[in-house]
Length: 455
Ligand SMILES: Cc1ncc(COP(=O)(O)O)c(C=O)c1O
Image (cartoon, rainbow, N blue to C red; front, side):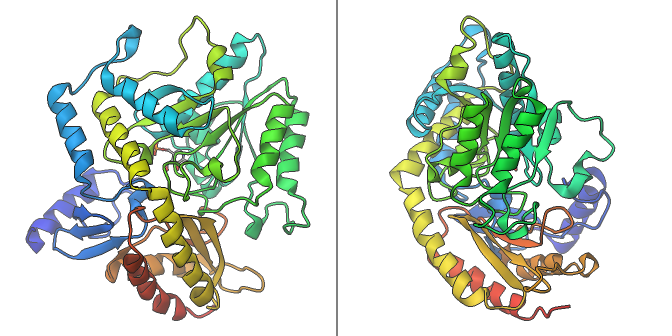
């Protein structure tokens, strides 16, 4: 606990000296300093309690204060805090981490490159994809991502990131050449103006057309999120992923599934793609791999791609690749996901959440499109359901919902229609959240949404 004055001093320094991503520099900060956490709960410096409905940036999958992860961390720190994997050196935690991952990843995807986070993993996936085709003597270099998809902010990753209606690309162009976008799979706001299911998933057909017209001889890979996170916590229709897999196979294009947000039980299965039984060629992982207790990312690589590097090293290694402390924590986190049947818990508690959202919230005038899988879901906030019209951005209705929730002790993330296709309230709490905590958060959200009148 700190005094009010002490807190104000910290916040003033913070405002002027610390960058806050996606927040205008110098603007008054939100005034909350989180200090402690346990399970799905957080406390700030004044002792106020919050339920975290977003696991911060959708990463603290096993919740706060998980003592086994802390023990794994401290034991490894004491034993060997750092060791490189460069030049053929190795250590036990990185080997054990890759063995544990191989038990969970789809069959055949059991070769790994480790990184220090999500963007780095995406970067490595791009390097691997391009070099793979180069090794085969084929000049395939283009990468296709989705409008409204998010893959991080390092240069390759931000070139594939196409949320924020171009805002993220302002002032940093030219981007990495050869990275192009196709319309996303948000059926509620179809970019092609179609209606599901009569559309016969035109968005997937469009992908095939783009590959054909760009020429399959130039397209190296497709990178999509199994369900879009920053783009609004939106999942595709059931036929989408199997069709995308077929298209990639038909045109000899590598399929990269960006599981950084959806991995490690978040959607109620170990990985997002497990819902469709689709096996990609590469998978990018981060966040839940350590439940965010340490920055670790990884790329899972199929036998086919790995074999394309016979006799040479894969590109993309960092000082902190295979960091022993991160790997030791990841091993423990993966043990817990399986041992504590976390995916089962997510399916059970999120089912209750969706039942309530559909029965109680959907009838509200401003709530539409309840959707998602497990704790990777959301609702759309609209001014007019019949036309799906968004609230006038200057009213900042979505920001108002977030502030009211924070005031009442529920920490939520929002997707603003200024940057994505619509205003959305996502539900992505730590996966260990209880049904009682979900109910408490929803009970607080309901009157806030019920008080919003169409503009
Ligand atoms: C799907 C996806 N890919 C990549 C990233 C980038 O990861 P990081 O922020 O760890 O660099 C994120 C982060 O939110 C993500 O959700």
